[in-house]
Amino acid sequence: MRKIVLVSSKPHADVETLVVNEIEHLDMLDSLRELRGDFDALVLTSKNAAQSLQQNIKKYPQFEYLKKIPAYAIGESSAQTLGEHGFCVEYVGKDSHGSGFADEIIPMLRGKKVLYFRAKKIVSKLDERLQAARIILKQIVAYENKRNNTHILPKPKPKSILIFTAPSHYLSFVQNFSWDGSYIAIAIGLTTFSVFDEEIEAFVSPRQDIQSCIHFAKEIALRLP
Picture 1 (cartoon, rainbow, N blue to C red):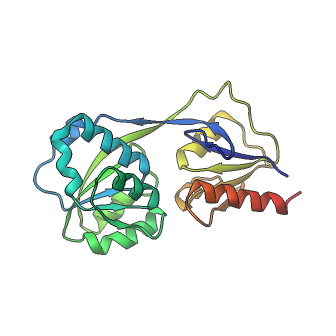
Picture 2: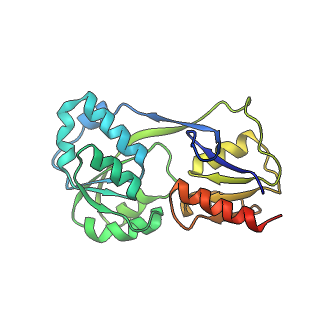
Picture 3: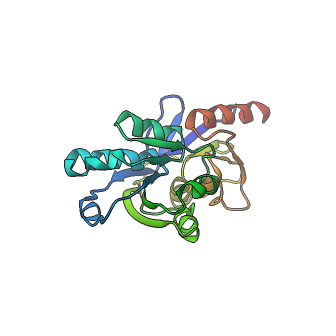
């Protein structure tokens, strides 16, 4: 069976992992101090943003009030993290892809003042979609996906099935390793899939969580020589 490798920012117990990035939760004190007026909603599109926000609130308790603002989370993982820390989860996206999530929440956010906690670099263009819908949007960079030092890591063997859980993971991989034409790529979602080079053989996982990606990769591996 083909080798399956998860290309990610942290190890996973159930599969070999190539850690090409690391998540840095950023200090948001200056940005949080700049907040003016009341906000009607929080938007978070990753567990990393939720974790960073919680860390900042723990460090700066004066921003505890943010937990009372209805939060709109892109998926179960983000919503679970928010719920565990006492945030008011108003809505959990049914579509874990950025464009689909935008379609879901825009009707609910029209006329509201929204605070969006995001990564330093984003591919989904969710901010542009919300602004185009004339939603009052304040953005705060909560975390950064930074490239790891991978020169000491072994390159996956030919015919490996590589799972990518974020656009930055794919971009870091191709910057550090030449792409072997025998690789098969699996994206956790459409946003990640959108950054793949056109010539590679690639699939999108039916469900947007790592365990489902691993299961999907195993199914593909069983069908291929």
